[in-house]
Structure formats: C-alpha cells, structure tokens
Length: 146
Image (cartoon, rainbow, N blue to C red; front, side, top):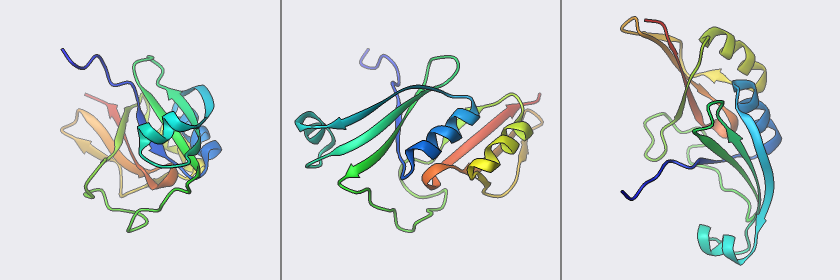
C-alpha cells in the first residue's frame, strides 16, 4: 500500500481569521496556527522567499483536516475569472456531511456564505447544496434524510 490516509486539503485564503471563523462555525476545530518560511518551504512548494501563515482545522471525528493558508510573500494571485464556475478544472469543492442543513446555512450566512443556487433533494435520501465560502471556494453540504 502506498497511501495511508488523506492528511489534509490546503486552501489559500486572503483573510485567515475570517476563514477560521467560517470553518469553526461549520463545526471544525482549530488545531493550531503557524508561520511557515525558509528554505524547506521554498523547496517543497516551488516558490522563492515564501512567508505564509497557516491554520490547521480538524473535522469533529478527527479523520480529516483543512490547512488554511495565507501568503504574506509572495502575494497570492487571484484566479481568472475571479469567481470561477463549478466546472473549472482543478479542485472542484470540499463537501461536509451535516446534521441540519438549514441550521448550518443560517450560521454560515453571517460569515459570507452564499448559495450557488438552492438546496436540492437527491432521491429523497439527501438534501444538498453548494455555497461560496472563504476566498470564493465552493463548499458543499449534505444532510442525510432518507
């Protein structure tokens, strides 16, 4: 076997504190924050002169984490278009299973969450939706109902 687990998924954000607040409201726990810079970071990431700050957010069951990263140097570049559609090549979205979709949406809206369209019913088994989260990333939510 070559893979042991998915350790984390990294998301580059422009406002680290706002992203932490968003994912904490979703139910994730802040595991820690750190400044990252130096030769090891430059070599691993493939950029020169990296200076960044990361926050590691853990899901409640402890089996998944998001690494939220803000680049202080070099400055992060914006995607084109600034808000790419859901069918853009690359990372599509990150999905979370939630107990109460309506409550979760109500709690995330003050943190800037905006539905892409609406909550949909999938075969009377799940209620699903896509929303824009921090830095325009797409976050999907799923509530099992059947």
